[in-house]
Length: 284
Image (cartoon, rainbow, N blue to C red):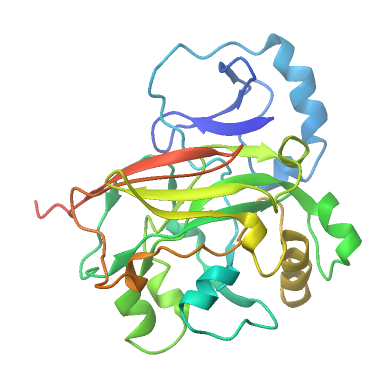
């Protein structure tokens, strides 16, 4: 299933995107796609609801909101691609580097990206997002698959001056409003298959900047989820992002950061894509 939330900001309805490309409104059976909903018999509820669910009106450009409501946290695994580590001249890590993004960073996949004040080194990072489907702590490797609801496209936007030049932890550069475009939908794990064999890419103004495959990840999805669960409880709806391949702006020579008018297009095989335009903050 492809699970999404459709509508204006604050008024999204839960919907399912069918194999026929049509959106079905399941809000009569599901108040919203939240962690609490996915902690229960969510698949049974949807399978019973879908046959009678009304089609949403045909719209060539529906607004896809953040696909999961009320996410408690986003956990990141940094420096997780072999080629990225090699190009940076770094030593391959022996354990995942973890950081937290607050849930207030989350944004709809295709909404405009508004530059916050002082963000003069804002960078892009296309990443595989892993959506957790149950309450879990200290998972064994063989328990991880059952704990995963599905996967999504995630852009781990990062202000590099705040992250790298102002001391402290990485979260300083990764936490502003809008720094986590997510979706447009969550594809359930049964439809994705092996998350370690997915093409992943990002274009800036039509020019390919990142082009890789999740097979290049240093730590697998199963390893990272089990590892994270040793240090914190994961809740239904939480999102774990799996690091970005090489091609980010701060590694270019000279570095290139986002400016008003830039257009980002990014995607992952079988998970969909995002397109967003960068806007300056209004002064009015």
